[in-house]
Amino acid sequence: MFNDLDASLTVLLNDAPPVELTLLNGADVSFLTPEKAFAPAQTTVNLFLYEVRENRDLRDPTPIVERDGNTFKRRPAPLRSDCSYIVTTWAAGVQGAARVATEHQLLGEALTWLSRFPTVPDRYLQGLLGAPDRIYPPPTMVAQLDPNQHAGDFWAAMGIAPRPAFYLTVTVELSLGGPEPTAPPVTTRFTRASVHGTADRPWVQIAGRIMDAAGDGVAGAVVDITDVELRTRSADDGGYSFPRVPPGAHTIRVVAQGFQPQTQALVVPDQPAGYLVTLTPLP
Image (cartoon, rainbow, N blue to C red):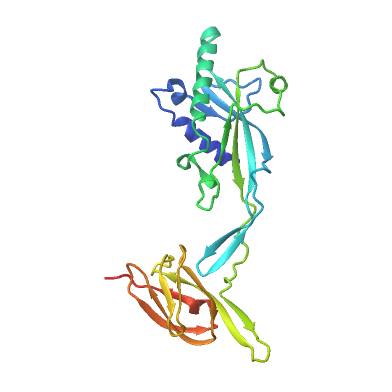
């Protein structure tokens, strides 16, 4: 995951517009430790990952529930981790005032370019960061003071003189495991009502789905159980429900824009597949 973040930041920095950011566009991007022996052969933007910390403010403990065909699957909410870099610039082939000027210009260009992105855009995300099941875009914080870090201590530990730098923090999500075993959705629920002196009268709550031939939900379909005069409309995902249906054999009719009307037998109660209706497009 962290190497995917490094790769994503590399692609982002390499995409700097050459007319505006003349040095950044041609600079190398490195993630090596900027210790005493660090001496890049070409002008370089160095991002040293010095800390990874869980972001408890952003983490949502609620499990992720997703539809998988006619069933649902649940997976743990991802861990949200702050990846903090110290960003420095290194000029090659020049010395003295020219080196300082080049490094300062490059540092300013890197700061300007990274500050344009409150989150890392999808087009730059590499590896697992760009996976289709990712939930959150990776937010960034650029040139914000880190109260837990002291720059002097950092450079002393590296064994070199202090350098101009800024902090970059990107929050990524880390999967805590795959989906739990799937289970069918609740499509039938029984209610039995009784009035003093009368026999029990059962009712059944049912739920189903209106789909096209590809299995995608059809929204806004009119769904009738014709023999008991019950009507509802399908939701955005094609789901529909009736809270009180008498047990037995019925007829369900579905009408949706762009599809042929569909009439079929309905048995209540039934297996989940018995409540599915597949529509045929109009010719």
